[in-house]
Image 1 (spheres, rainbow, N blue to C red):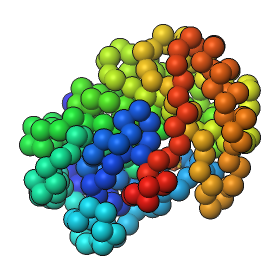
Image 2 (image 1 turned 90 degrees about the vertical axis):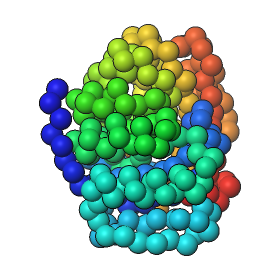
Image 3 (image 1 turned 60 degrees about the horizontal axis):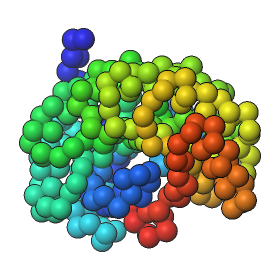
Length: 257
Ligand code: SF4
């Protein structure tokens, strides 16, 4: 596929912190949060609009942010990350998140090959797991995918099972390390869990599976009970024949970004 060379992009935040979600929890990562998202999950806790400036926490954990104007070029972004990675030498990975970073796949296609070489860090991608064509353009540059299977009973959105299925097939084809995350709330339906099991088993993908109990957000406080979460864990683990982990959003417990 021919790269389209998008050379600038809108980013909302850049910071250095410990990963708070999924099986890579605790790894020290350099976070780049891209603006914009095509979804509208009811539990969303992330500002997704384009911002005029990028908030950059140069001193990790300080809560003090510098601001530089959006959009930024590949070269500008690399310079910022290089500086932060050099100052904070203990990074394990570069973590690309959003919003939905795959909406910027044209930019990532240009940015990631140089970033990998220059920063010398594995690249982890967090995605809603439904934009396969965009993902395919950059898959060779990704070391780990943290992808969602979005449950309509939880997100309040229409179902996107087919899109997740196609995405899972692409990951399997590329043999990329993967964590599949299902955000669950008190409203999680058995039908949605059964559909998720079907997707995972039909793809025969080797991936970590994580149930992430929803954190109360602005538009919903339908946090699941302990009994619900444990029941769903047993139900899913039995159905897919592998370990299913319950991991909440730990960065929020620790007061981290
Ligand atoms: S996919 Fe993520 S960023 Fe987008 S609306 Fe849903 S929770 Fe928010």
